[in-house]
Amino acid sequence: MIVNCVAYVDGHKLPRIELDDIPTLCDQPDAFIWLGLCEPDEALLARVQALFGLHELAIEDAHHAHQRPKVEAYGDCLFVVLRTAQMSEGKVDFGETHLFVGPRYLVSIRHGSSLSYSSVRARCESNPHLLSKGPGFVLYAILDFVVDNYFPILNTVEDAAEELEERFFKGDFAQDDIGQLYELKRELVELRRAAAPLIEVCNYLLTDAFNTHISDDIRPYFRDVYDHTLRINETVETVRETLALALQISLSLSAARQNEATKKLAGWGALLAIPTMVFSIYGMNFKGWFPELEWTYGYPTVMGGVAVACLLLHYHLKKSGWL
Image (cartoon, rainbow, N blue to C red; front, top):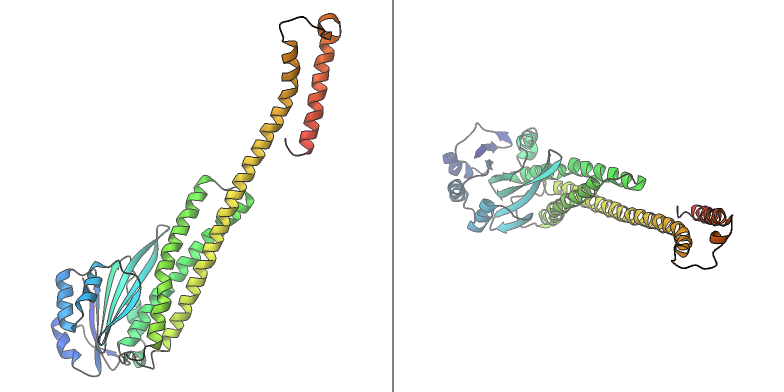
């Protein structure tokens, strides 16, 4: 459950430490600790709460997860919730990352589907000048990593939406395509739920000047994350409109196909009406003035007239597009 526990002094990494070493290191003014956890149990969270003096409400949220992205201040500690996402077997899996950010510490807690933050750690350690600014830079790096991971997912969903739209325009879509369309719409709704609140989170981190443990030198970096978040939300809305248009196209094409089938059935019904009417008259059970009964050429004349009438009607129906 403990992925990593590292202390940094003036931006330089110290050897791996244990939880018992945390109180001593937290007292050093030029040091801070990054504790990484993955799906910790209640006992470990209680111990972490005692070590860093974390608020019980935030610990409760971090334990149960299933939170919307947000940022909350508990004294000198920021509690940040992020929704993570990654592609797995053609579907988007979501997870959560909870961050406790204090003047001398950052605690990251991962739940569910989430990539490792080892690359984020390496990126931070390669910039000791920025890392010396404190845990605010690590918060920026994690937030930037989570937001950037949305882009390849959105590109995949966008390509699938454009492919569906193209098939719908050509009219060669199948019933499974409708199911795929609704699946993409559901994933976009989840992506929007994950990305839209990040605008508020970035705004808070950019403008809240009361949290002094986020250095003023680091605060402008959150503007870059804010811009990426805006792009993600704009892309989500664009893809949603594309899928909505594709759905409208599919419904319109389905209605057009039904109309074409109805017109053809009506045309063939009109063709069958002529011989049906004539032959029903000659099928009456009484003797009347019927040319076929007394006239030698009556039968072929009637049959020929019916054939000519049917051919003329077929020509007009074909010309008007009903057949």
